[in-house]
Image (cartoon, rainbow, N blue to C red; front, side):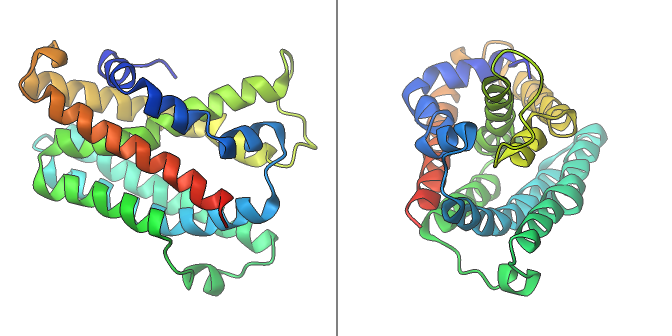
Length: 231
């Protein structure tokens, strides 16, 4: 996906944290296929719980929106999360012998609790821009990671090898089915910011707070990967 100016500026302002998140050992293991399967399945269990809360946060974006086009996009994102991404997690876990009842009974890890409650709290306390900035590292970061891993796994030609152990995961987040909604989320972030704090976000009195919010969410994303490795 192509970064919007605001997203690019937020990443530049939090470069060490962004690198730690997008090039985490968990991500590198996904890319080269060396990630232990137990770590991946633990991550999937926790990500299933995370996506439930993430769906609620995007539903909160509907409440925070004051324009029908923004409400429509947020509602579509909720639908995609529940109808597609969560469903994919259920399907993948079922293929690994983890029934839905067992998946739903998974106990939330500390990193899952920290991240999901941070995002929800950002939306409850702040406005739509605060919420979107807290959500951005996940929705836009996964798009960036998926694209990068697909290019690396293809090794300069063709697609991800079909025998790659995480080919389905990489294809999901590199595919247009995920990339297109991510681009829409990026545009929403940009238009909301432009309307609320002006064309040059870095000159806004809110800039330092938005950067701090983005940094925290990015750091919590890296902790979420680490939780999988620590399983």
